[in-house]
Amino acid sequence: MSLFVLLTYFVASQAIGAQSPDGPEATTVYLTQEQALQNAFPEADTLWSEIWTPTPSQRKTVERRLGWRLAEPNFEIFQASLKEQHLGYAVITEQIGLYKPITFMVKVDSTGQNDGVWIMVYRESRGGEVKRQRFLTQYKGKKPTNPIRLNRDIIGVTGATLSVRALNGGVKRILTVIDVAYLQKQ
Image (tube, rainbow, N blue to C red; front, side, top):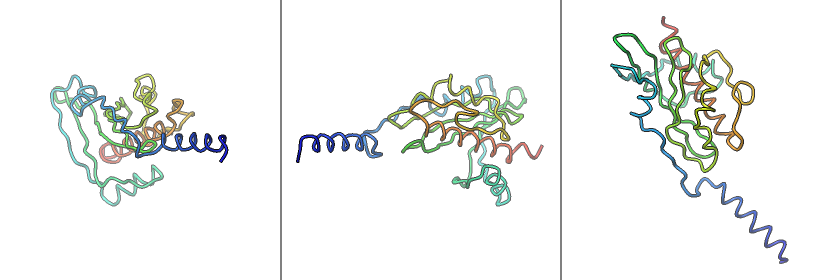
């Protein structure tokens, strides 16, 4: 074998190994559940959670609006109030980035608009820039009826395309779930 063939084989095997899902763990915990809820509802005097299990009709509505199936059988939805005034909803969710799940929290105000996104745990070796508030503020004010598309509605992060797509899908899913679970009833 020539030196060129050996060198090409070595470089290719290193590149494949660097992208392997079985490679070294790159988990970074940015926020605990308590910290994320404190960020979402800093002024709240009451905080509670409910498990929402969609009926078959509600599940069908959510899936039709999203264009894909819900994997979760139910959702834990946090709510908060201040002096009996409702402050909104928050859901902790996960979406697969390149190989591993990204855990994040989406806050939705009482009118159904996104009021914040916080990355709680990031497990990929690259693309961690999606945790920056400069990026995450792009979701603020989005409604379940708004498109949330990469490089049209949300400007992506170089090297984190799949992480951005995961966040886009997760935010859209939570906005739609809150709308169907709580806001369509009003």
